[in-house]
Length: 240
Ligand code: GTP
Ligand code: MG
Image 1 (cartoon, rainbow, N blue to C red):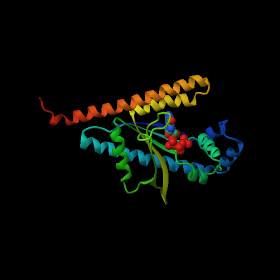
Image 2: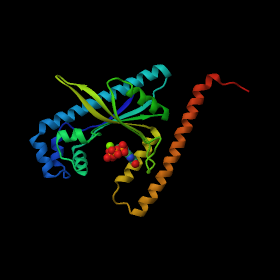
Image 3: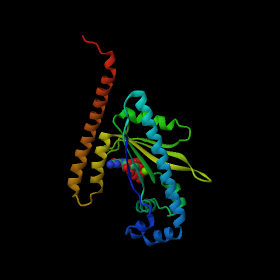
Image 4: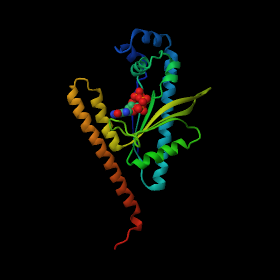
């Protein structure tokens, strides 16, 4: 069975937000005065995450029947916290409101799909984007064009409809597709990114080391894929 993880965003958004030292008092006022619209919006994003997650689970299931293997290793989902929503809006110089969140942020709802092989990433992305209720807003292919850090993944910003009692809403979701090896790398690199107490020279050295690891990981992904393809072609294999 497919393992899925959800980094739970507690129902009691407000309690946490109010306890958070990061939020300034203005933001807290805005949320307190408009608790309902914020709760409703976050609930819609949770529904959008469910829709996208289900779509990938369905594709995984079908792929298993067709090719006798699962392309997806894990699906991780996350809803952006109010803390980082407020921080990001402030960084962008945007106001803090439910409307502003929807307009200015693409990654409040996040779905990360972790695959065994690079080619599964493109197959799954194509299958998702071919569905007639999915609208592609943006693609960032950091596999073909890795970031200077060495980061690789395929990012899609999509819009998906969710159907509520009396309305249909189109919600933005950020989908990140990557291999197990890319995910392993990104998790470690993320730790370096957010460690404040490391001296600058050590940070530079670790960045260089991680960049080299990223190249090795890419080579590993390609060689593993080649092995898988040779195994799959086993039928045509002849002794010489
Ligand atoms: P953000 O303001 O971070 O959203 O930048 P952006 O809108 O240009 O988005 P981008 O698609 O470049 O990256 C968004 C997400 O990808 C981040 O939140 C991370 O999860 C991941 N990511 C991007 N670059 C890196 C990187 O160099 N290292 C790691 N570990 N993750 C990255
Ligand atoms: Mg982003």
